[in-house]
Image (cartoon, rainbow, N blue to C red):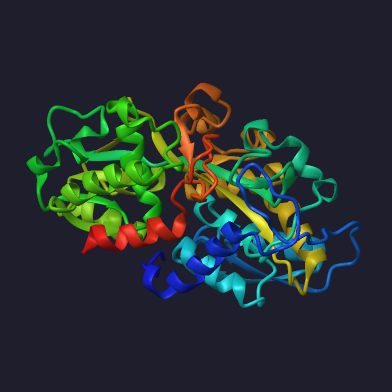
Amino acid sequence: MRTPSIARAAAAITAAVLAAGCGGATGTTGAHGLNPPDLPMLQTLAAGEGQVNLIAWAGYAEDGSDDRNVDWVHPFEQQTGCKVNTKIAGTSDEMVSLMKTGQYDVVSASGDATLRLIAAGDVAPVNTDLVPNYADVFDGLKNQPWNSVNGRMYGIPHGRGANLLMYRTDKVTPAPDSWRVVFDGASAYTGHVTAYDSPISIADAALYLMKTTPDLGIKNPYALDEAQLKAAVDLLKIQHKAIGEYWSDFQKAENSFKTGDTVVGTTWQVIANMAQADKAPVQAVLPKEGATGWSDTWMVSAKAAHPNCAYQWMNWIVSPKANAQVAEWFGEAPANSKACEQTSDRNFCTTFHADDDAYWKDVYSWTTPVRNCLDGREVPCTDYAAWTAAWTGIKG
């Protein structure tokens, strides 16, 4: 279950991002301006160590305890001899904090956490040659700004999704096709608007401004100079007056739409699926401006006590059958192109746009903001520490 932990992790976040900006570690500086430690990656696989400690989003490591028919953990354990110990994390900030303890081997990190983990030296580069199923991962998920630095992969892609706009069809008319309804038009629904509770949500406002206010010069919603960040923050402060609640727990978000406490705001496809299954009158759309989104990556701890089991887990979870199972259970596009042949719903990958390159061109996956502008400009950009401080100011 996802619960807010921004304040709890603020010190750790700031330290990680500042370390990246100062270049205090040894290594090669990539396009992000990051200078991560030159950590070794596993060169050969050996026998498993008997267990693996995961940090995962809810729904990513199902063992039959939630639904006896949903279990890809026990088959993995039986095949590899690696017992799976799973810690469910509520937010990306919590994942970053947990990985710093060195007690976990692998984490299913989203793009708002990955560069922080890389910059701090908390995760090691991944030898994709030791992960045979990596070959079938969609090319659009490989060597991306959120999972690689200077051409080195730091994880194995798991799946992806868009941050959609959801609305109550009995309360919001006409049917919205733009993020305007939660920004410039939010006052019409004061007290019943929702947004994801994270500094990375600043990118939602930046994307809207990128499409509607071109004079600001925003080219990438994660690459904001101080003036651009201020414009996004100002917009979000206006939106704040209409917010009924911010969400990070997807079950609470779904319930809020069901009860009508929330009538419009940011959602994930899984929330829309749950609400519709419970007969709530909701629809979710990809607005005409496009959307931010998430692409999760399994990353190996630089201090992994069970690296061989960690690699076996990454290969398993991105295998066609397991990747299809988790994608359908969670509600996301799978990473493995062959997973589409394994889904129980033969239209699943079409519904979730798994191989629709045109769709993903309009989805800007979460990427940790860093000082070196991700859009290539040779001016300072604001980093995640600045976004964290700004988010605190937005919420008051």
